[in-house]
Image (cartoon, rainbow, N blue to C red; front, top):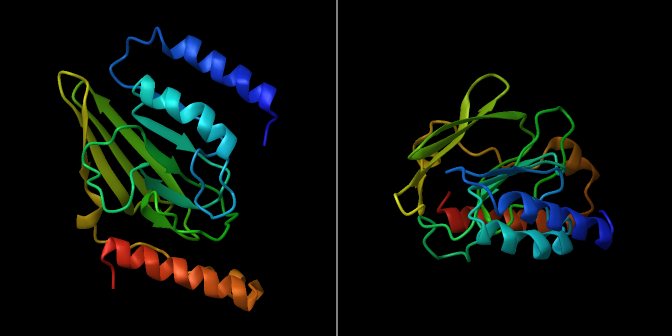
Length: 200
């Protein structure tokens, strides 16, 4: 991760750029994720610096990489309604074949393990439509952000109606290389995630 002075400069540059932004939709892209898809890989200092700015300037979606897995969600405590996000939708994705194990964090509403994906985002004045596809062209994740006249977003979750189930199994190479304690931790997170999502 970058040192504090570099983070400070990036935060200053971002705020100076976005405070005069007159666009109806704002998309931010950076490599290191604000919220990681794996426990222990969070970039806390980056998040503490940038997330307040994302909320202040009403960033709609943040596209990220680095973790070589897929996760999409919002920073809202588990159990609370996610229909009116008070900050951006966060997406971590991977398009190449190099894969890491996934942590199934509480911020995630849709996840994928061992899956190459690409995203198509369509924007019009009243709606941002997000779709994530596998390399075979199968629709894996989808949601709409509907923006009212006051600039307030409503999240319309579309992934629940998709035919493709979430790919959450630990890749075989990790099943073989993980120590017993690591497998136990992963399986516990896996069960917690499924319970939170109402999956069987």
